Amino acid sequence: MNVNLINSIEALLFGAGRPIRLSEIKNILENNGIKSELSDIKKSLNSLEERYLDTSIKIQDVASGYRIQIKQEHSSYIGTLWNEKAPRISKALMETISIIAYKQPVTRGDIEDIRGVTVSTRSIRSLLERNWIKVSGYRDVPGRPTLYITTKEFLDDLNIKNISDLPELPEKTEIIEDSIISKAV
Image (cartoon, rainbow, N blue to C red):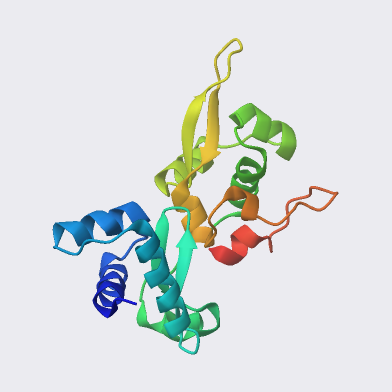
């Protein structure tokens, strides 16, 4: 295994501060004189995963690519380093994003039908500002309501690669506060 390739990929993941796609890693390496195939990059990522098995960090494959992150069991140790508090997520916002995640694409009216209450503009705006949802189009009915879907950033924040990685809904689809989404945020 090419140690220079592995170390270069490791440096990219540490320095990026965001997930990086395989093709982006390949392009960066090639622009810096390191020729490699996507299969070699994947093998190098696997080597890094093995290297980190007994450490506090890991390689995580999420929707936007690969990133280095702290393992869940060690994440509480570094929480005190940040003065910022995680933004609060209201129950209404949690219910709204959960409905969008599980039923997408959905309109505001669909969300209101499921929740049984009006969805505030502030909730939709908050999800758009967090880049957790985006407009995917418009339903072909009178009024042409906006259709919403989740984004890759939403999946990244939940630490999952695909929307299908969300846990299955129980038969009773009542949204509860201790859902996977609230745990991730």
